[in-house]
Amino acid sequence: MPQTTSTLALFHNRTFRMLWVAALASNFGGLVQAVGAAWMMTSLSSSQSMVALVQSSVTLPIMIFSLAAGVFADNFDRRRVMLVAQGFMLVVSVALAFMAYEGMLTPWLLLGFTFLIGCGTALHNPSWQASMGDIVPRDDLPGAVSLNSMGFNMMRSVGPAAGGAIVAVAGAAAAFAVNAVSYVAIIAALLAWRPALPARRLPREAFGGAFAAGLRYVALSPNLLRVILRGFLFGLAAVAIQALLPIVVRDHLDGEAFVYGVMLGCFGLGAVLGALLNARLRARFRNEIITRMAFMGFALSTATLALVGNAVISGAALLLAGICWVVALSLFNVTMQLSTPRWVVGRVLALYQTGVFGGMAAGSWLWGALSEGFGPDRALLGAAALLVIGALAGTRAPLPDFGHLNLDPLNRFSEPPLRLDLSQRSGPIMILVDYDIAQRDVPEFLELMNQRRRIRIRDGARQWALLRDLEDPDIWTETYHVPTWVEYIRHHERRTRADAGVADRLAALHKGRHPPRVHRMIERQTVPSHDDTPRRGPQETPPPPPDTEL
Image (cartoon, rainbow, N blue to C red; front, side, top):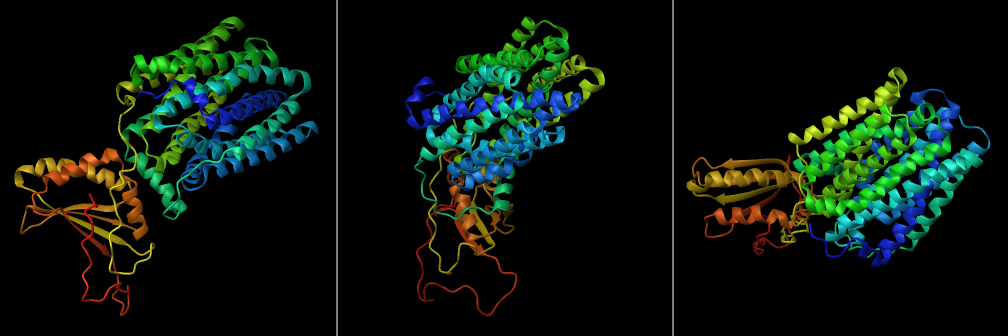
């Protein structure tokens, strides 16, 4: 997709620049904290599984709570959601630093604190990523995602080394304190940001309904499912390096905390290079080719770490791994954002994160257990083999290329005038749309109706059905239900400009003199003596509703 500006030109956007710089400080603190937690666990426990679980304790809550956080991102002020998340992590980090200074940490208590920090990250991430679309134009989203990846990985190139030095000089408690201070920058930037958000016309979705809507949208979007599957496989296998690197440094390279930090710095430097290469790779290769290269490159790096005990060669392998890491994950993220309308982008990104971080959480446990049973070298070779399988999976389920679909709201729908005095929560509502279709057009009509069914259900319709009149076979009736009147309005506001083609082709097939007839009904399971009150007298006839159902 062409971009309206160069990637670095995004720094002219004051809001983006302010938040990006604040995120640098926050990411630096998080990486220092990660080094401190991983190295402290090696001193608290000799179990290799417990060391690997440090990584799992951070990624597991992201897998569990991301979708709920996506609901919050789509239904609440994202800025406020991020402020709550950052404030929570600040409190937890202060408590962790205090416990470490007092020597009160145990292996399980350390995992508990890192789990809570992971909960804050889970709440923050969907709102943060979805906010990019509020800050930059849609065409600049790939550049914004790449710059965010670059910023994180710039800190990855210096943060771990700095973390190793801090741990070596002042202990893990100092690393935890540095992380606590780092939250101040992002909190201050969020407080200074005043996004101009459109007024909300409809009430917020109920949590359960919003949760289900996100699942339904992804389930009916095959391209999104492919991205999530590949992200899961990549996270499951690639996390082996992060989970087992402390053990590799300690046992294979005979290194201390500083060497561990330098190795992570090599990984981070590679990730910065990957962010710089992203645009060129996307311009030259299809997404699936880039994805396969990332899988195979990471497999080569993982196998090298398993087989070679030299620090220089291991650093070079980690450099390549960092390039592949950011190329793959940023490509997945951009594909999800460019394939999703704004009304559900937080939930879709959350489901993507659930897949990736779920894979990382499972992989951290899996490779830790295999390392303890068979040694870290065999565990790393197993991860390399799985990465090769992930690359080959693209032959059956290739990653989609960036589409050129216009996912802006269609905005054709106007709420029809009603003679019954309904509230927004009145329902259930049943919709019937009558079409008059010539026999020669039936095959095309049925093909379009298959697409229409997916669009309807994706946008919230229930019990969709297509009926044919037995006495007049040219008459077809599309029917579906929505729970309430407000959900009917919300259903139409979710329609995108990319969906207009199906509606226009259906309207062209309709051979009647008038547009397809729309019936909007409210269901009644009983017959009360007094029910909905007409707004007009029985002698008045309201004007026909506008033809907006299609």
